Image 1 (cartoon, rainbow, N blue to C red):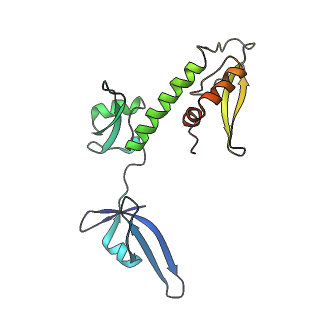
Image 2 (image 1 turned 180 degrees about the vertical axis):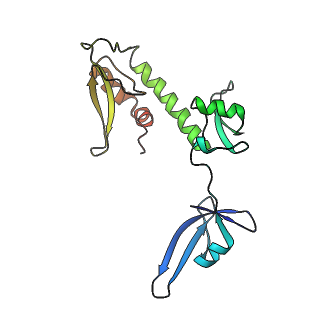
Length: 189
């Protein structure tokens, strides 16, 4: 949780707390936004001197003038860019090109780059969803076994999935580009 000092406007994060049941007190540990401890305060002081610094939770909570991020493509490549929410940003939001944080924008850039690499591994395979006799191979991540796995389908299309003509091609892609698979499947290492 983020707290804003009512006097200075500085924002801190709650880094932990300690409740002393015998004394009936709660001590709150604060840190700066780099997560470096800056001190602590008792709960009544926190309630008096700080307020919750809640920002927008999704891009649909943004109001005109709020800070947000999009991706710009200059000659040097994709770059996250900080902008203020306005009418243009509203359009970007509707196309999935608006982010609350720079980190989200960078993750999306990484995911799209990785997906393009995997599409090349698929060797131009285009699933024909009207053909039940055509097997379409795809990947899933098994969190219990901590492993990429192959699956096939013939009629059910999955959102945002890269399909392969053969299981062999898919396994070859696992070997060549394991990091890209984890990125596309949004698996945190």
